[in-house]
Image 1 (cartoon, rainbow, N blue to C red):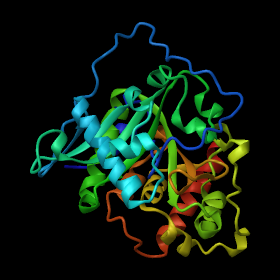
Image 2: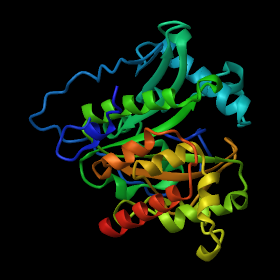
Image 3: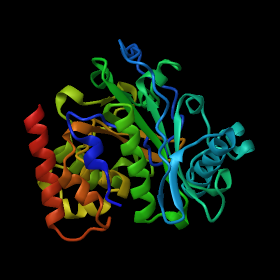
Length: 330
């Protein structure tokens, strides 16, 4: 089946936390936050959620339907974030062996289910957490606001969506699984007319200098246009310019990028200003922004190919595309 992101993200059509590991983070938050406003739905009758139910072999992607399926997603997140990636669990999280927070009840949970393991909770092998503007109003903020000022993203009444808590069981970390997740996100975006996606994506470890090359590369080549640029909150701001631009080896920087961040760049994604250290989750975070009507077929084709570094020409395309789009839209 053709990868449908192009259809989902085309301008003029109906379009229907990301954090690699992501968690509650520190409790330091901006003193002033934009007030969440519910989207205007004048003359529009609310519709049921997207059906999804996309299949590829024994794998299916769909939204969680039961509390047991959400619990299975939280259990998978715990195994990946706390057992595999050495996040620091609170007593409650450790006791339950579940990664959970107060945002979960307001989010939609996108699941990949292996039907060879079971049709429901027992088959959950991948997950993404999706939080739209209207749903975020129920809790008063987005998770990302713990780390970034997103005032510019929240201007107007268009639908925006936060991506987060992305993880896949180790034995399923292959192209088929990520393709299914993105096909599911594409249908969700189409259904809810989402115009902009954002969230925190992570480098493993809390020493930004160990990621000096890729952080510097992202700043110099993929910084979001001013009009939609998040900025790390003052108390947590870490300058991404760890190296002068002249010392950035772009091929080495691309090779050092986590696959998730690389995938967002291929979809036309940008980064906010400043990294953030998340000591609880043992990560260095950047804020990713993808404006869905900027996504064109060339990004879809790149994402749909094997996610390996193929040759130096890829770095040039990513660099030029990001720079040209930024200049075009700034």
